[in-house]
Length: 356
Image (cartoon, rainbow, N blue to C red; front, top):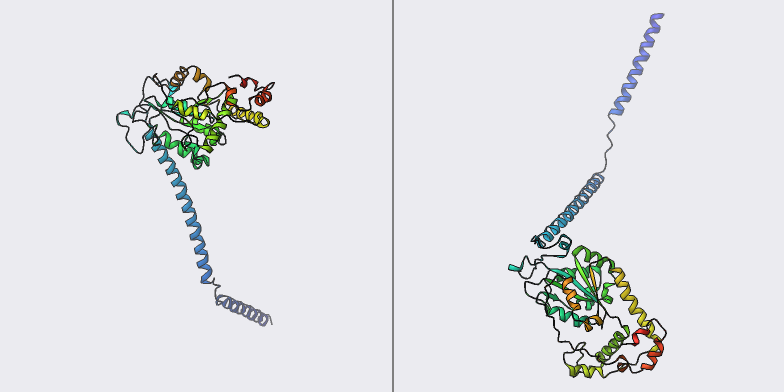
């Protein structure tokens, strides 16, 4: 009996094992799951795109670094110091040795060049003073470069223009020979200078540019000159041509015949605006290397220009200009409605302007 029971148990175990083997066989013979070929291609393409993107970023970054290194190398090459022992350490940032792209300075390669800018306002004597400075054999002031609007459209255009000027690659009638020792321009405060003053101050300090402020004490005289110049610009009194500056006494007398009528209602507003513009410029540029010059002081004492030559470290020379002053009479003789102007300014902070 016991043996018969054991045989039945063995038979059940064998049957179970057989069933399990069949199940395993069934599982093992089931086909493996496969992903579509298109999906694999898509994944591979995505991986390749990511790789290309990372590689391009790496190239771009390396290219930028290389570009900066190359720019620094060029700047160092262009600004090779000649180690003049006579130059004090404090002056070294303001002495440059440009390498122009358009010509070779040859034996003057080690002639140090000072960068400057005459900062002024229209009808403040800047044209006259600039011609005086340009009569010096080593000074080149290249005029009102930023009167052309595209050159001052943004700070990039401004710095590009300044770089060309200070690299001695700017051509004008004021351009000297290879031995230029001071190069600059005439720049009106309303020609992008104050609009971008923060960036320009940074540029001046970084490049070692010295500022020469040329202002006018009597803003009423300046206003008369502005109105007279605007009248001639419209009427062209000299043989159908407009001249902002004249070179003969006869031409000056013709232009001086016009006496503007000044609107007394807007006069004080105009004087305040001009005064504020000049004051703001002096405050903004106070931390740059600069000198302040007034037109009236130069008219009364030509030796004031020797201070400018000292400032630029230029040798003293006798300076000359062909410019002839237009308004030479008393101020009241150049204003058509003098009584109205006198009444408008009497008792105000501009009353002193009534005195020549």
